[in-house]
Image (tube, rainbow, N blue to C red; front, side, top):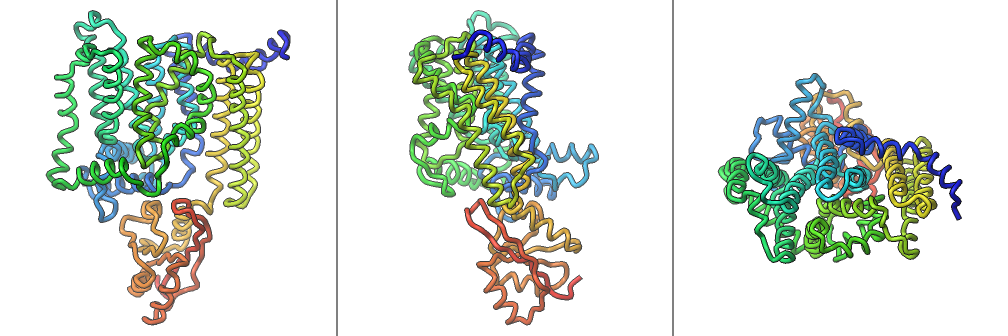
Amino acid sequence: MTTASNRDQISFRDKGLTAIMDLAVGSHARAVAVLLLASLLAFLPGFFQIPPTDRDEARFAQATKQMLETGEYVDIHFQDEVRYKKPVGIYWLQVATIKTASALGISNARQRIWLYRVPSLIGAVGAVLLTYWTALAFVSRRAAVLAALMMASSILLGVEARLAKTDAMLLFTAVAAMGAMARVYLSDRRQQSGLAGWTWPAIFWTALAAGVLIKGPLIVMFVGLAVLALAVTDRSVRWLAGLRPIPGLLWLCLLVLPWFLAIISRSGSNFFAESVGHDLISKLVSIQESHGAPPGTYFALFWVTFWPGATLAAMAVPTVWASRREKGAKFLLCWIVPAWFVLELVITKLPHYVLPLYPAIAILISGVVDPHVLARDRWLTRGAGWFFVFPVIFGISTVVVLVMFGRQLGLPAWPFAAAAMIFGLRAWWLYQADGAEHALLRGMASSGLLAVAFYAFIVPSLGTVFPSAALARMLREAGCRPAMVALAGYQEPSLVFMVGTETAMVDGTDAAEFLRAGGCRFALVESRHERAFLRRADAIGLRYAQPQRFEGYNYSVGRAVSIAIYRAEGTQ
């Protein structure tokens, strides 16, 4: 039993977390400053150190790099193949980042993967701030700060903030669109006259256009399903007039059509056949790239991907359900439920597909936490143990992975992992005494410490799990410039990004022929192609130096790899 004197001591121990919250709710400017700082502390560990990851990040970065190399900013290519799975938006953002970095004097900007991740970082931070802005339409400032902090500390957004691809920026546009739509839905139409009556529609349609340019029709699905659900529950769509649909649609078309018309003029129907037919529709009806999973997968993953906020989700359900007919709760539930249901039915599943729904969940939870009405039924509050169980499982398992694949103990990460477990333990053990808000803040501190341990120390130490980084380093150390490279077997996009666009994709036989031409040439031959390479090398009389060898693990295909670097003997 926790006594009153013990509770005073507890509050004294955690007064730093309380002081931060009190500071944040003092004004909007302070709230934004605290959220900006919290987001950077959550997203920056490991941001600069982690090598290019396979496969999506490396493909996006390489396609952007080729735009910079060729000056072609309409068509999208990965080496000689067109890349029409996604529209051009994220590539343009990455191009702008690299050009800005070069103008600021950052050397070799095109080769620095962290620069390609900057749009994702901006999108993630922007999504946190927009979650706060959106939440203000539903809850108090204190609850809005809590909702935004839930997003900043969530496991899934932390991952997406560090990857040079579309999903963090899609989240940014989705929250902007839904926040503007919420204000129109919740407001009195009589107050929407003059210039003010155009502000929210302008934000809505601009965000919708940006989302379409970033990731195609997905943002339209999220918005459209929410509108449909509200229309069914309200039996009215009169509020939609506040979004100025006719001028809004014209504005959206003005923003998105120029590039779509340009790409159609280049590719004909190929872009839509690839992006809509092959990429989007195929995911609805079939498994793509071994990412199939049954319905319920997102529900199971939610407790991990939205941790620590997810810990309070089950406890919030009774109160949220009781308020489901209130206008604000109705909007948030219509944001979440239809899209979640559809995504659970889609055969191809990836964790980030549900990310645009998490801000609404965070706002619902924060609205329950703020007035301290979170359910305290014993069977529900036992779920607070997840505040502690998750960092224990995560901390131990990541150290085990480091020992297995990094072949080291990773001692610098241990103090951060231990501190994360302590904060998680306190969040659970003192839940009844201090309440949900304090538990959540401690869980957020635990999440930040886990991010430091994992991204800043564990991941950069997993050298054998990043074959491309190790192989690129070995090629640089060979001291031959400019190097021409052929890949046999191991042909991951990350190595193309790190070695060069002209990297050849061959089999073992052609790898030997590639070296036959002499000069500064290297053949990187995976063990399963090595017999064919050696057989052809003997047949053509190729003389080669003793190869260097890399032993590691290719997580993209889930198997160990052994790769030899061959170079013709006597070449300079």
